[in-house]
Length: 335
Image 1: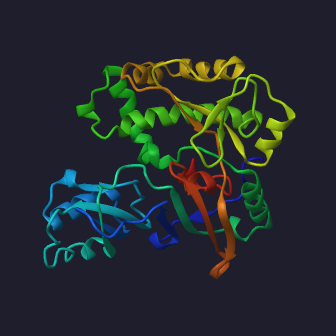
Image 2 (image 1 turned 120 degrees about the vertical axis):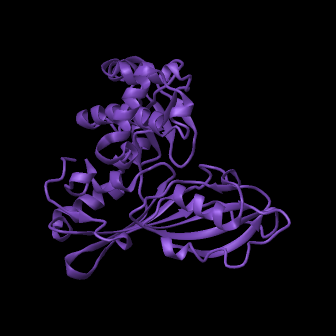
């Protein structure tokens, strides 16, 4: 599919970008940790965690959450608070509303909420502008729903104006130290950039959703992967149906899992960015893989007021809604 040509708008207000975490399980109703279902607006996840720790009178390390959510959005997600044998103090949430945070539900659970355990995210996004009113945008949407979306890391991974990536370059050139990147955000930015570069090359030649000899394929909806040295008709059919997806490297130490020309291309991308690739390897971070394509689940297109459109869809954990929007219309923040 050719790049979009029409301009569009999104996130004109936080309410235009809504996200809700989805889990395969629910809090059990008893235990030492209180899980709170939070709706936030105009504040990021890390800031909410700090607010919750102060409001509940617990240490920052006693607050858990699964995923990071955008600041300029209305998002809903679980947090956990370690409160063995005690309840929240009276008026604990008084200062939360002032910061755009509401507690919608609170349920006990035996364990702390760990990072990355949610299954995915449900998005409800309003788009506007020329693209929202064009037939060709609706046609592009239907193609994406049927065939999937290039699984780019979104621009938010790299910070405003790409500042996280520039900081990562500087840090990796000197030698990465955890105390200078305690959450690993800069390291993650560097690895994401190399992945995006590999994916961009596969998008350019049209193979981002089509298996090639030497690929490592990911089974849709699972963490299962397998290598292919030859691609037969059955494998191509499975890819065409969205059952399997080619993967790209999350760069790190160790041997590439891919082979043949696929591995050569991935090495050539790494070689073109030696400060990033060699710096990542020096940290000891191990090689991993990520699907080059992501499928939209339960996707809908609903016309709205003033020529705008509501898009709803579910993505697996780690996939970016902005990667979907960049395939629909042109907007500076989606580049």
